[in-house]
Structures are given as structure tokens and as C-alpha cells.
Image (tube, rainbow, N blue to C red):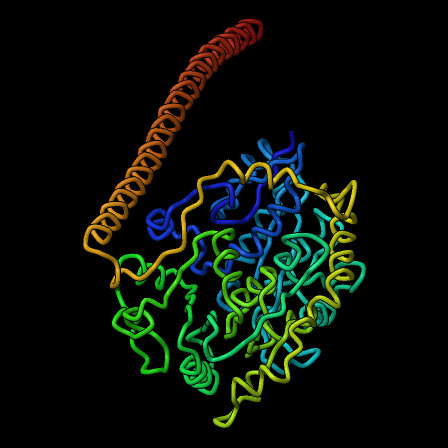
Length: 476
């Protein structure tokens, strides 16, 4: 069986509980990372292929270990072409250049303004070039999230259709070729799901806040790791920025028992299938709703969100167009919630074509409509934790249980770290001992050679002296 390493903090087949995730950051800082990872795990797991998470470890010194144990390396990324990821791009390039196995980038984007211009220069250009060149030496083509990123790479000298191609987000292909959005009756009494990002501009934050008051019954799904700790453990709060955003567990979102934090995809899907509408400023929060078959409104605020919205025709309302007069009911009225369905088949086929160009095996080799997949069979045996509800509304015994679980997870993490450090020291000690033995061996060799040379020098000197003496004798 082939083993392929994949950049991810956890596999969907891991049954990590909220305490473990909060302690180890298995979601890479944002639970939205689980959404596109799920799509890749489900698509690429076959009877002959096992996908193994790398737990976000990135160390060029691991190259020999990776070469020895894996048949390929999958690196799915979000908006990795950005200033604060430059160091990661350079380390990935260094690692990839040392690998002898194929490396596949299945989705990557550039962080750009909403109205990104072709040919614009960014401070991450050089790091991007190094990374892309390294990957192209190990695979046929890179898959990018949308046209903005494709144009960006073209501007750096890489050819679209040869070096890279838009494939959208793998999350959109999580459940196969077809996509079906259900029809719902959206009223003030509807149960809705809301998502938000504190990085959104004020006009978007204000719109989301006033829109939630239009519904008496709603879930709020935060995505940051810090918000998982707020939900699961009751804090600490987010540093206050005086924005219209739930920064404290004393906010009505939490005290009113509206918050639901998913720690895996199956329970996230179940939650979203309960609601009549999802809306907000989170890319994967609304993609999750879309693949769950729930009507969704996404509010893109930058080029990263815009290119995926365009590519998958996600029902949207542009963030920059939102004013104080923008009304959620007007947006609902003008929405075509079925838009993503219209491009789903074509996009899926293009995605599968990309996988085939890279000679990647997948669950759709025999048919585009398998009755089940190897991944589906495996996940049936996984005991999946439910969504997390607010700590502040939990009974005292549940609060105690959560802190005990988190404390156990922290102790386990500390124990693992200590073991790694001890193993490293033991390894270092073994290396030092080996070095000492080698030095001692070399010293003995040098000493032997010195003695040998000295003996030879003495003999040579005596021999020369004899010759000189004979010459003198002959002269007499």
C-alpha cells in the first residue's frame, strides 16, 4: 500500500476531541482548514493509498525520513502567497528540493486586495517563485484556487495550462460530482447559521450584527482556535478591538447559547443541514453550508474570497458594496441559491483532470459516481465528537469535565514534548559518543602514523649517515 504524507493538522479518521484540539492546535489556527483537507482525504483515499497527516511539521531536515517512508507529499494550502507566510514558503522550497518523491500542491491562493490588478508586485514574489519552481520539479502542475492566483503566477513567468491551472477549492468536491442545494422557506422564524471574521471591515461587521437580529433563532459558528477555547473552556476572551464582534464569552452569542463550534466535518454537515440559511464573512463557513446543501450567502471582502466565489459561483453579495442601508431580506430576495450547482459538474471534471495529469490515484478512477468510497467505509468506524456548545451555559459538572479533559491533554502534550527532547538528547549523546570514538580512532591512527614516520625518519637518517661516512672514508 502506498503511503502519502499530507500537510494537515489531523486526519478526518482521527477522533480528536475538543480538549486535544484546543491543546495541540490540530486545526492550524482555524477550523475552516478541516473543510478542504476533508475533500482531499475523501477523494484520494483508495484501497491502495493511505493518506497520513504531517501535523503541520515543517523541517527541511526531515527530507531523508520522508523519502524513506512515503511515496508522495500532498501540500494543500489556503492563501499561502502572503507576507507572513514567506518563511514557510522558503522552508518548503528547501525541503521539497531535498525530496526524491513526488510533491503535489492541490490548491493554493494569493492574498490580494479585492480589486487585484494583473501584474501587481508583492513582497512575497521571490518566495513564491522559489516554492513554485521546487514543486514543479516534483510534479506536473500546480492547482491554484482561482483566476486571480493564476494570473499572479503567470505574471511571475509561469505558464497557465502548463505550470498551473485553476481548480477551485478541493472542499467543493468533498462529496462527489453533483451538488444539490435544497429549497428552504426563509422567514423571521427560520433557524439560520451565521459566521463572521473579526478581520472584516466595519461595514461587513455591522451588517452581520444587525442582520442576526432579524432572526430569533440562530447558530453562530466561530472558526479561530482562540474561539474554540472561549467556547469549550470559557476563555480567555479575545483582545478587545471595540468592534461589533463577539469578543467575550459574556457576549449574547455565548450567554444566549447560540454558539456552536464544530471540530470535524460530519457534525458540521449535520448542523448546517438543520438550518434554512447560512450567511457571513467566512469562506469555508459558507462553503461548508454549500456542500451540506444549504442556501448560503457569502460576503467576500478580499481577492482570496473573490476568486473562489467567482470560480464556484457561490451565491454572494460583495463586501465593498454593503452600506448602512443594505438589508438581509433584499439580498435573500435577489439571491440565486442554486448558482453553485450550475458549474459543479464542469469544475469537478476539471479537478479530476488535474489529479490525472499528476498521476494521482483517486476514488473516481472507475466511475464518477461510486456508490461508496474507501474513505466512507473507514470513517464509519470513527467515534466522532459532537459540536461544542458554550461553556458559560453548560452545567457545572460539564464545565469541570472539560477542564479535566483539557488538563489531561496538556499533560499528555507536555509528556510528548519531554520524550521528544529526551530522545533528541539521547540521540545527541549517542552522536557525541560516536564522535569521541571516531576522534579517538583517528588520534590513534595519527599517533601510529607519527611513530611509523619517526621510525622511518630515524632509519633514513641512519642510512644517510652511513652513506656520508662511507663517502668520507673513500675520500681518505
